[in-house]
Image 1 (tube, rainbow, N blue to C red):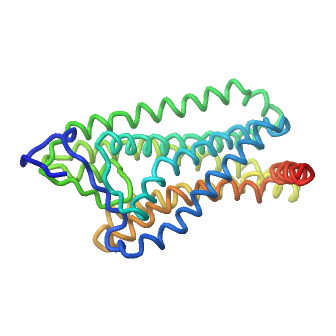
Image 2: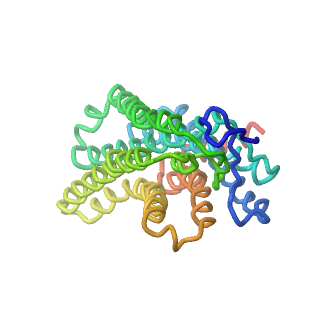
Image 3: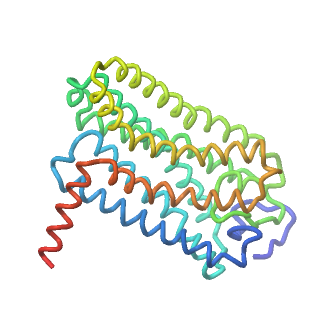
Length: 318
């Protein structure tokens, strides 16, 4: 869309999202693993949700938190991947400002909410190992529901100001986003006025939401390890640690690429090519959602058993 003036508000322009800069010729090949992982993410998490909600034996705190994580995984991948594939397959990079800002909001909103869910899951493991006799009395369905609602409300109030921070900016005719989807700083960098407030708010959000969650998760696991190493039986220690294995894998899968991208943009942006940043960002929205149900399916005996029961029943019906 042609801009008729040198300065324009965000409401007057369309954006063009170009996908992976420098790799336009191989967009079709890039789309194959992304599309495959998106299908796995959606199907895998829906199956996980179905198992948890239909099997009474899985109506335990750990699995209820896992259902929240599965729901967040579906939303995170669906907010970004369909438009990403449209760019890769049909070169359909045009996006209205409303859709772009909505995508930006929901992307950050789901990320912050998922971080809070992982913190709640760490608290679940802390209570289960450190206070096993009080586990079901502390983490009642009511408490779990309130924790889920608190995660959503916190994420909303943290991310909603981003919409106003973007809409306050003025632009100078630049509307090409060098990314596969709309995110806060990608839009803000197109502005011709100062974006210091956007940068400062982004750092504050990272420090007091995601980084705080990570610190609290580390504290939870430090207390868990202290309790575990006081258990006299080695078998009991291994069993206790085994219940945390899936959660630790999911934590590493979620936070490692996020922090790598965060620090690379601020401290290594000139050393790492832009297309590497974009590729990692593309994979980030599909790889964790795709692998989470697989990790819990492989490492959690109860989920394996219920899945095999449902699978054998469906074979008999066929």
